[in-house]
Length: 336
Image 1 (cartoon, helix red, strand yellow):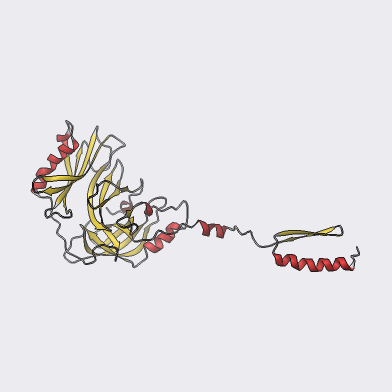
Image 2 (cartoon, rainbow, N blue to C red):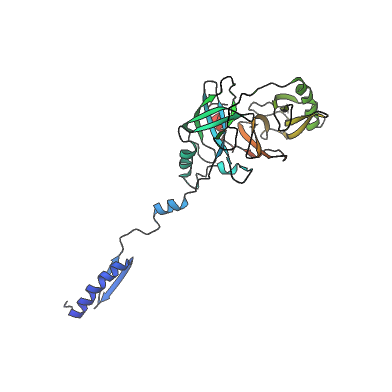
């Protein structure tokens, strides 16, 4: 084929214009023939761009941790709440790990929250008793369960090692000077008043059958004398296993009023059968961000899980958060 000079010039000039414009695909026709120009670059919606767009931003801390400790200095910690949101707010919902929505979230969260060598303040009964130094991850849990990290505890000399305590980053609003704390047992007045309160709170013709399975003193703000927490059960035990017929659990916290004796300020009464067991026992408490936070152990037919109550000043107490089913963070690593 012979191409006229004018047509040849038009083709030579048009080609670079098309390439510079970056057209993805273009067809050029002349004199009965055609050529097609393709952009070799991948489409802009690549897998890398998609991954970057779907990453969930990390919620800013600081976080509140629960720690389980042993007497040899070993410990494990798990985050249970986010602190420092709205003034006086303790937010439990932000701790769940949305791994199904963003597969990178857990690794990014763990690398920041559990950085090796990071130090946390260790608190029990509203007072600081020492520090924890994180060693790194101990459990690669998936789903909605919180991650668990190992740590080493450093307890103030002369202070006993609690089984469970709180841990917070420094400068998070908690006590920053270690103090020795007294750990008295239940007094005789508590032991006398306990069954009277239990019968009244449970009610019914079987209340007298309630058996005490836990009791401990607890400090309540503004009181000179300690209050108490207690757990009573009917036809059941705190150990894992099915309850008896028409089982009842009672957990209560009571403050001592000089003119009235022990007055309940928080009670949880449950009536249940097999498969519906729910009982609570108090573990520890602290005050942070203007709120009192209590941690309790929740028992069901097959496991024990952490549960918390975040109570504003003079607010109504109740269970605010329970570990998701199948998590039991502190049990997974063999420490209770």
